[in-house]
Length: 271
Figure 1 (cartoon, rainbow, N blue to C red):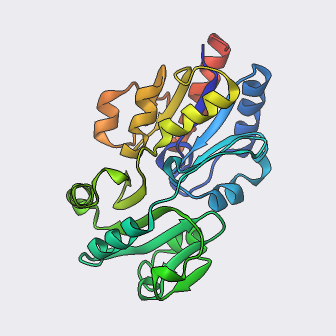
Figure 2 (figure 1 turned 90 degrees about the vertical axis):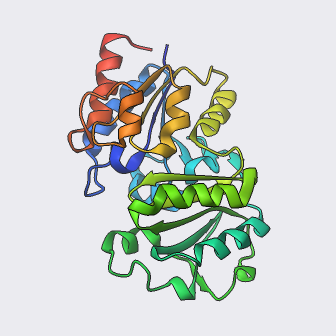
């Protein structure tokens, strides 16, 4: 029995142009709710970005954002909010400053997003990056941030992602979780934070088993969630490691693969 239908966004639920079929989603979501299920957006994006792009569905979907650092129920109760320790942010920045960035470091807080002024021009030619960022404040130093930071995110050359992730994990230790959604994007969140732990928080809240889950993902930041799920689904357009480990969705992200797979399940099995 499946109670949760959880989907990553970029490369999974969203098409390459970052859009989705609103009418189709509304129909599938209505059927999930009719059968007493829950749809969970599980993404590395921050809550401001998700609320903006899913405005018409806020209040109907549960949110796991910042790769699990922040978990919010459909009725907008915060279940988890885990900050990256400040000393580790400083240590991480020292490592990051040794490499060439394709996208400047963004520190995501509960109410705002911060970027060093020195990083402001990085990614300036990337229209999609500029559209999504919505930096609240540009700062000279991390000491200017006066709220907890739940995620640090930045971009490097995609070919260097794995090597640098291993370096950061070795240098920062087990007090943080370093992950990637692919394409050169690296996120740093607190220890023990991932999408699966976010699902566990929701499962506790709704008093259902966390593994009663159909999960969709395309990247390595989806791995823990896919492993947890009774019904994991990889996107055909995703990371090869994910594709090899899990069954595929009925179609890729360009052809509503998440919605088609959920719809087929609901029609054939129900929950």
